[in-house]
Length: 118
Image (tube, rainbow, N blue to C red; front, side):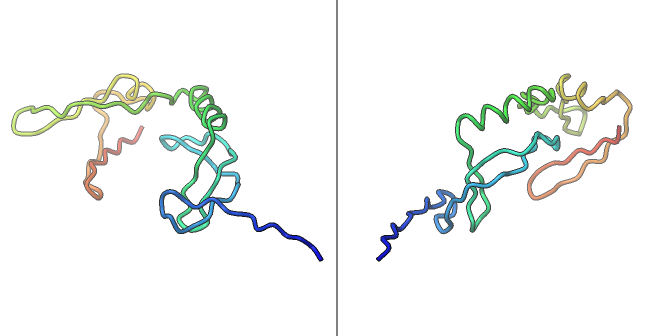
């Protein structure tokens, strides 16, 4: 007779339905590919969770690519009858934005999207 222990799977803390399985995930930040990393992934909602060591590796990859800390808060200001958003210098430099470049702005699910072709 073989004694098989039942392996208790971790439940997903997001959907509370799926089980977490170890898998490799492709990680990106601000549209820049950072690499593949080991994570626990929910088999129901596909949410992924990384441990502290893996999170540090992802952070290091983002720093190497020069994108760590690009996300910042800014204020919406008034200019004439319109509103304006300032683009911080480090984001403008990263995207090579220059004064006078044409941009397309549109709403998307409660967000404002600004697309500039550079």
